[in-house]
Amino acid sequence: MRLLLDTHIFLWFISGDKRLPETIRDRIRDLDNEVYLSVVSLWETILKYQLGKLPLPQPPERYLPTQRERHRIVSLPLDEVSVSQLAHLPPIHRDPFDRMLICQSMAHGLTMVTVDKLIYEYPVLLLNRA
Image (cartoon, rainbow, N blue to C red; front, side):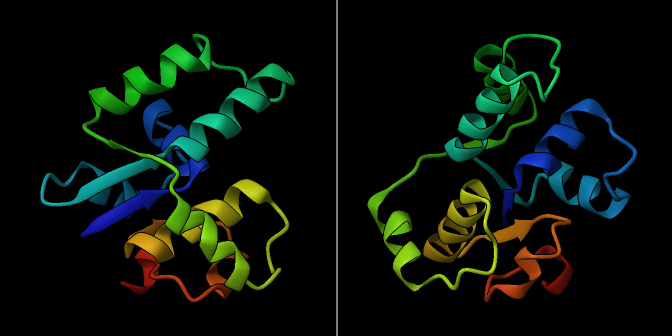
């Protein structure tokens, strides 16, 4: 299975947050799965960190790539094919970062891993539907 982690899922995973369901934690750890973190999540996290809305043990530009590599999670770049999906995406979700993650999931056939109920309204493959 090819998984794309929503930003909050990645942050919960690396911090051991109890809000992350064990089934999702197990899927991320399963070496048979390809697990991706979008550069969009890094962008979102840096902005929230700069605004003082997200405390982290180290600056995000160092902390997140280190944690991503430590957990064998692949960086997913933002590409034109993904951005082009925006033209066909219904305006259900207002968060631009989540909208782009949805587009990347659709463009690359990735299974989204999220607990964001608004994302469930999009025609994307979701872990709980997989």
